[in-house]
Image 1 (cartoon, rainbow, N blue to C red):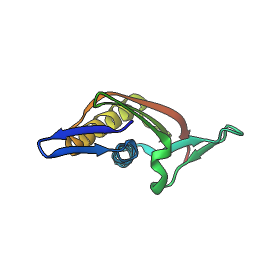
Image 2 (image 1 turned 180 degrees about the vertical axis):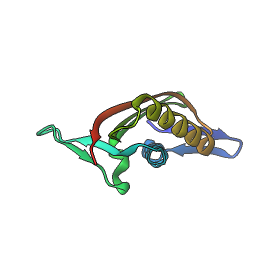
Image 3 (image 1 turned 120 degrees about the horizontal axis):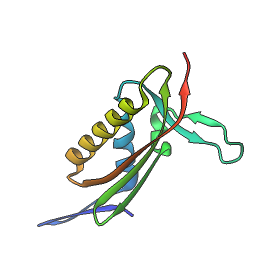
Image 4 (image 1 turned 135 degrees about the vertical axis):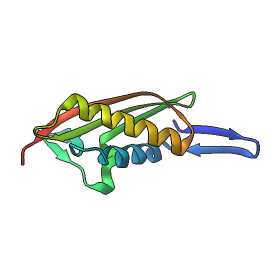
Length: 117
């Protein structure tokens, strides 16, 4: 479902893919994140997504113009996972709310893996 913003001149509809792209770019700005993760359903292999496919590692659901986001990430070895997770949540929440005017209900950061250098 997409987010709908009612204005005095009509409606603005923001697709969940747009929200996922904003969330992906915002998350990638955070220190300690290597990339978004997608698992192959066939063999369970973890794949780090390229910049143009970040939204595949993000699930967005919209109800009553409240957004729930689940980000599947791969972090760099040696970073404090809780701190990086909080930074990702803060950055994603700020950027989506300021760019769309919508309210974030919940952001979940799922750490799918850690990459060693």
